[in-house]
Image (cartoon, rainbow, N blue to C red; front, top):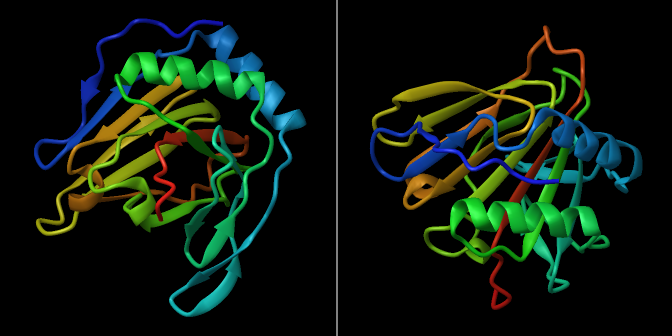
Length: 201
């Protein structure tokens, strides 16, 4: 299965880049990836610490690394699940499209519009000072918001089936992003966020 060569649309007006390629994967390929992950990925629901309280993540996740690296966020230490041929294939597609190298991926399953991701940035030390994050969306379209930390300017878009969003430069330091809840979404969405994790952290 192949990604499509495509010129992306820049979402950010300043302070970093968020390049969206809406038809990165063909529909048939995207559906095959979605079905395989939905049925066979070892999904987990983990407890995280937010604002001093421990709660279940409002989605299912798995963490994977080509170098068997752990990853910590929101008070949660993740150990890697198996690296599969499917992940290796998507890794190569993301590296080719972004020009960046990746060694890990966090996979999220939003079961329906009740599952969400609050305002945050992927600015953990392990990701490095100006990380490149390549995010593939499969399944249901979900709204994606970006908000500048200082100006509060907000940008909204839709992440559709088979799309790729590449965030780089100052984007994780200057902007927050979220996947808000949506009553109208009744189908699941899978999101794979490839990144380079530094083993020194």
